[in-house]
Length: 502
Image 1 (cartoon, rainbow, N blue to C red):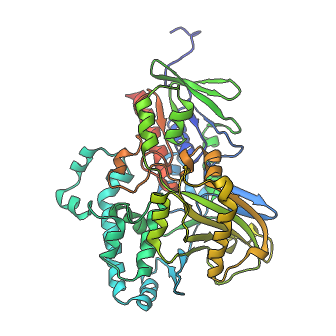
Image 2 (cartoon, rainbow, N blue to C red):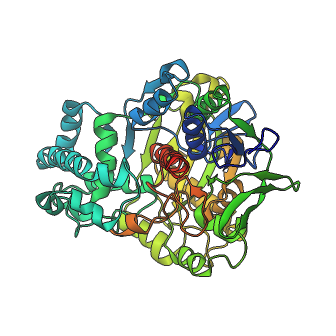
């Protein structure tokens, strides 16, 4: 190659990342730290994807996750770039982790303090104290056994189980659901609801999800939860800042029209203004099903498209952002108002495919931690109800207002009728989530975790149909949730570097 000839080798071309969500930013940071040129294109005006913020009438809300766990994942990301997390982000511990309200009037503050937890559980059911400690030990064991296979490594293959000792294979209870594993250890309906709720962290049902998802409880109840100073969106801002410092070019308000493919090889991406960004490696931080349906050439892999369309998706969510007049000292930063029949909620979502008729309601109030998030004498309420992904059985355009009233009525049963004190309000349905984030059917966590083998059905981070195309985000390995999405970016970046460097 002469000096006048451009270098068109994969290593010389930029890696294009579609989507500036947490998975895309994570991948961009690791690639830039390894010396690669990276261009990130984002359809929205701001980075962060599902992790974002909304400001209105003097109120500020986190519009996606409300806390993070697995702090070490973020420390590792910044360390990979030669930086310290604490120089970019201040993470504050949250205590209580969550305040739980039950229909019988019971209130329990989940805490990392085992003595405090034991005293609260004893008031509900004395025998459950030992059961709760047994569950924590069980969840820790699951994390030790399954973490290297399903969380902290490349996408799992059936032969990866060969790395697990035979006696450990039995100890992960592959034949049990999460709810069944919980029932073996605690007796009270309250503790069964509390521990079963951790399945919803990945949009699953505790009555269908495998017992291995109990690792989520271990991560939170023993490792704690964290809230960034300034709000969850500060994580996206910190990652964006680091990416730019490393030389990553981030183009916002830049939707992608298509991924250019020739002879089974990525050629780059075409933005909506017709610009071709040439690249032999592209990371799509977009739901995999959405990529196949809207960004890749039609007919490229019809079998794959059909299979992706048939995979059960995780749940979505119905969200109300409320600016509420008045203060509620009996509420915490995070609050859960449980319904009477938890199983019926998931029957509605996953079998009937309609929003729960008797929903569990989650309320996060970040102004408890940061008073600047609401005007004086007011609170910012983030209200979330689990909902089915978009489908033919419920029309949000027609039914959203009615369902809003149902959610308010549910809160009123707990003495929290705030309808007359709403100063500001934003409503987000699964359709809004689909439009804003590209999430397939508006699902929040990609492929469902409701079956034991779904970890193997989750799309690989390396596209099997197009050379040079990779995936990051909640729809691919290792799954949904901020730490997992961050790890998906790590895997995608490693695969890019591996394929170039051999």
